[in-house]
Image 1 (spheres, rainbow, N blue to C red):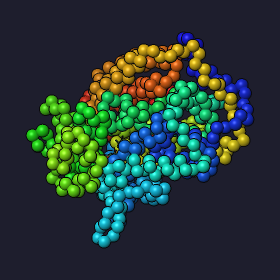
Image 2: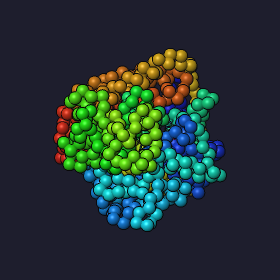
Image 3: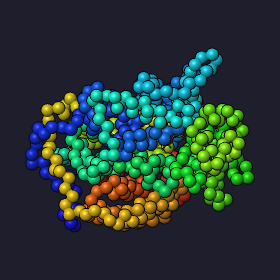
Image 4: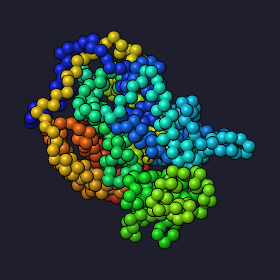
Length: 548
Ligand code: FAD
Ligand code: SIN
């Protein structure tokens, strides 16, 4: 082991406590819906720094199309939204989490509107109302949306409020590397992070009494994903390294319909199309979903994704078709302007022809285990949004429940963290060592990083995808062990950059997914193993929790 191989935070012995100044009251890692909701609410109690690892507009949130689920119409009820969520979650949802998050939906949506989000409105029976979309697994229309650019609109509104707030500073292109933790008598507390400034290449510390992890998902673990490049599971990996338990990592949701086109990098074709009557067809035009589920195209997402996968494998297809061309062209252009325009740019006119689609990794249902105030097991470390596991989604997330969960939990966390802040004020702050690169050198062989990155994503797609088996999981475990060793030795011998940080996190998250999938000897929700094809409530009606 070279001197560079000693992790700086491990070397920190708390010989000294001091009154050294804090950098802010609340440090937020991530500027998507969860991070911004938290930041705006927490800024009422103290100063906030928000880190985003790329430009601040780049987050999974910005790509959300379908919308945010919430009981809104008079025909709908909380009970119905709760039941739909529990049904999708296949026995693994935490009922308390489901009830409390669903019931807080309308208030949270009203707050988003108050912050300036403009959801699409329609005229119905002479009244001007919010338009409610329908998606798979929902028994009512309850999805508020901004045409098919809901996430971008939410980011615009929250981004404007946060940027204008005197208590909030947003630091773009700052990549959190590791949490700063203080350990005492077997328990741990968080004091911020080591962070890489991508513009200068320097690693510094940000010290804060409250840290919020809002780093989003991990779609980049898979070769094909609907997620943007930022989604490399950094928050899960950092929290796990710091000792926080993570749960339900085997439940990766594959979105059934991403555009299949060589030039289209991860473009989603929203489930809302199926909500408006789009039909999945084979190349000869035959619809096939009714064969798999009585709800056809509106069956839960895991069933639709598996059905497409099965048809593609059965017939050796590269894609299937999603067809909305039977709806009126004006309706399609107006309801789905972004999808229409994007498809047209690839030569596909969705008002007149079907769209070629394939499933792709989309959403991480598991994550860092939290309570219903977003607290993790580490004192003053919170987690909200896709990085967290509250118990809302169980074994499968209901469409459009994630923006809801992220917004509700971001808000709640701010309330709880403000109390923590009051208690932490006046405490002595540990003196954390400066990041010490030791004898690390500049990474010259980029091919070693890109090859490992590619191997992880390909093996996860082939061995730990929509359908799994014991043999595939065993192979994945062996390959990842080797990759993990190689990546870790490379990591410690080279100066940090964002690719290397992400690669280390990616291999950790991949291992957590494989370990969880290997542990669960049954099929449930999003986890389908051909060697254990049945659901086994007697043994597996519980989350899969892994701690270091
Ligand atoms: P994100 O919005 O992903 O934000 C993560 C933030 O963390 C980013 O700012 C990123 O820069 C930052 N970050 C990450 N790592 C680091 C690091 N190491 N250091 C510093 N910063 C870091 N859900 C719905 O409910 N409805 C939908 O219609 C819907 N449509 C979707 C469509 C697409 C194409 C995708 C990809 C997802 C969709 N989802 C939808 C899921 C939903 O968008 C996400 O789950 C949700 O937006 C996650 O929000 P978040 O705040 O947790 O994370
Ligand atoms: C979509 O619009 O299909 C995505 C909805 C979601 O992931 O919740």
